[in-house]
Image 1 (cartoon, rainbow, N blue to C red):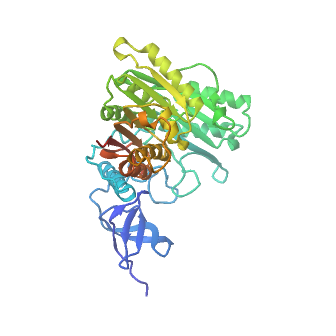
Image 2 (cartoon, rainbow, N blue to C red):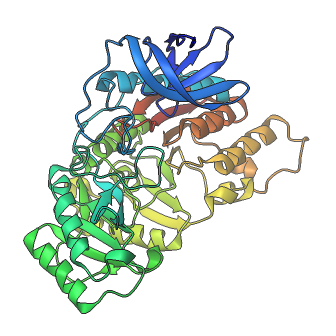
Length: 469
């Protein structure tokens, strides 16, 4: 006689949007598809000594926040798209979950509690994804070309006919793109299409492993003529080989209208996936930074100038620092363009960009960059550990000058009185926040989440650190 399934009470969601429950013996169970406060049964796929992982089978008590997913390709079924993980959870509840993830990480990893929780930054939940990497695969057994995200927990490409998180015009291209690739001589050697949408152009970057025939190039041109906003770029090898199929045409750019700033970019440049949220994020970050006309600001991990150039409309002087000399050159170009186009009411403060390996920062390098009244830090997922460690080392030297050899020039250097930290990884934010609060003399005066990737478990956030008197 089979044992009846154990009903489990789901307590929370983890970073992968899996429900978290405990068996009567205390073992943790991660349940894909389950939501907090539901009573469920689970089909276990993996077992370890201290935890199990499985998939939702039945719901005995359903969460009031469970909703019908909008996308027909979302779900737990075989072949389901793995691009989204939270479409079954109400949008407001998704944001609440991310807020809790940020707070839990700050406390459990950094032993930091923000004085104030900021209102979450939210925006359109559908049609927001202006950047995406779509896999391409010719499935010989099915006789079709598939273009889309990978299936859930699989290397196979999902059979996507639409995607509601992509802009509607881009979602409508999925089936025509399948037909295009199926017609090409290079059908077997084009593994990826990366898309980047500007305000007026949709750039499609075709990764091709072999040189394209002239006939295939003409097919791409015909596709672009039939879909007016499409602009083809080719990538024969690494990212440095990305180039336009044909010169000319509209430029990729996005606008920050509140600051009168335009940011041109290339399709392989890093820009935010969600431009609607980015506009709000930049405005929120600058209000929190509160740079005055008499203040110098450093923008660490400045990229193309997404924050640097808006800051330059408010501060006395701005220094943008990035790890790539090529990226710094692009940022300088963007600064010159915006300076030339600025009206008298939007003049830019003196702005300088320099290249430096920000993952190998030292107190000496930090001092060499000079005193700044305020910092903005916007690092990649790895965070800004070396930078904040250098800042903490300088603070510790002031507290105990006899503990180690002093840094040259540190006596006349002073730490920024405010730091605004924009994060795309709550765990590295928490680690760096712990250093800032416990070793560098700051308090975390505010923190909040940014719902940059709706329907995914990805957590972005913003935090403010003020120097203690």
